[in-house]
Length: 149
Image 1: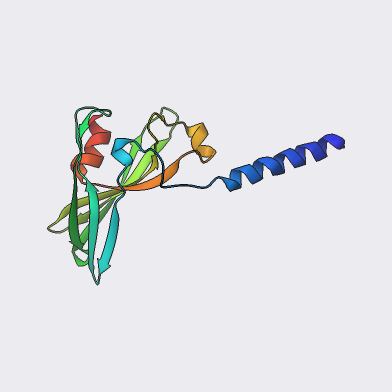
Image 2: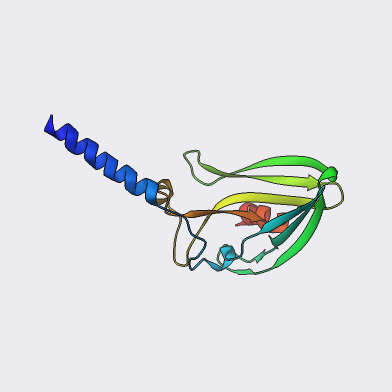
């Protein structure tokens, strides 16, 4: 009976620690995730700032680029749901790509935000060891990164 109390107390302490972990935007981020995108609405026009446009030579070697662009939401024609498997046991990265009539595609991906020297671990991710970020980029960046590298 005494072991149940010890187990419950230990579980409550771990739950408290888990729930007390807070995200922060103030860390030493990797170069590819240091700049966050943001947007402003003006009626049916959305202005997106810091759209990522990297040119990759490998996953670790790339030329950095960002730009700003506005999209008319009335010209939205397609929404594609893209699935990129990254393990043999069925896990995958998913994201959306929004297709605009005359403005091309705008992929949006939710990703972990790594600090310099940090590597992805699904175990650490389960324990909230990464912040999350929206990556908004052009298809030459977001899609090509996943299909070519």
